[in-house]
Length: 382
Figure 1 (cartoon, rainbow, N blue to C red):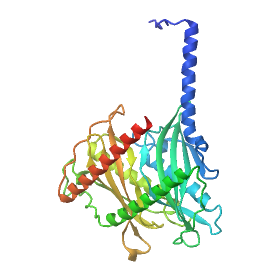
Figure 2 (figure 1 turned 90 degrees about the vertical axis):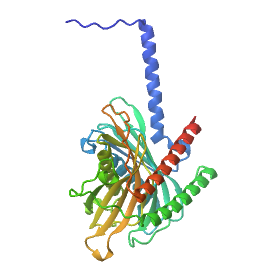
Figure 3 (figure 1 turned 30 degrees about the vertical axis):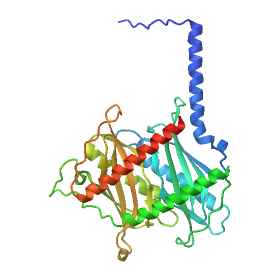
Figure 4 (figure 1 turned 90 degrees about the horizontal axis):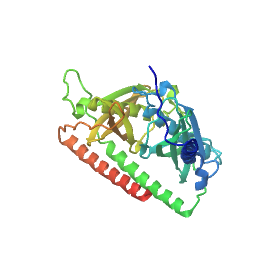
């Protein structure tokens, strides 16, 4: 059997020129992606307020379909934010402190990260108040075989510095220099907005009591909230904790993403991926020795996405008198994919009762608001 290669209709010089143009285009794309994580100094970043984690993605970072698990990315984002925040807060303060995660703004999963790629996680301090600081984080994935780079994730995190001598004491944050008065004013608006939302969420979430987990004795109908609801129990050990013996925010976020993924998979029975995470609010600290109950339940479903509320309750084994308390809450958005990683329609959610109807309507409002923001951002960029 003979194999034939089609003849090129181009002359050798034309082929060389075409190859040169393609190579130049690839170089430009790589440089643009590189500027995402090493060119922020051009935007006026302050020296010492930036930190980068670079790590190759290994097989043990994969989810069940072979891509990097969303929880791994969230954990790396928090680690980079914690490092740059703690370094900054200890640059002038005599009382040594550790930056503790208080809130994560909406995290976008723009493109998947694959095993074998290198993840560049860059954290940049963009605003400081007297007792808190904002860190914006970007994740760029790099294919080290081809040199191609792409922006994979964006997030904004808020930290507060806690004294190493007294964890309940919040120390002052050294100020940063802003490139312009406008950027400082925009940061101040973000600060007041997240502070108000955090207080409102804390007041609301304490009133929410999750329904009981599924029982084999009373099976739920498929595509209902009760059918897909899932819980995970985790004992907080030393490897999960900071120097204060309190759990790392990234550890908690990884557990939350795992539970949300189980809920989404049960509802669709397909391959699912994290699309975005709305604000993650850390209401109370979680200490070593606590048992975490991470519960996820569907609140809203559109034709292409699922919103899953995830809450974390903590209960100390050492000090049982404190009882169980609400520690963290967030909304995760997942999408369903086929074997070719193309979006699939999401099954309709069957609503049972007034409480589920209320949560569905609230989820619909968040969905429409998020959609309007995306369209506005797209128009602004164009």
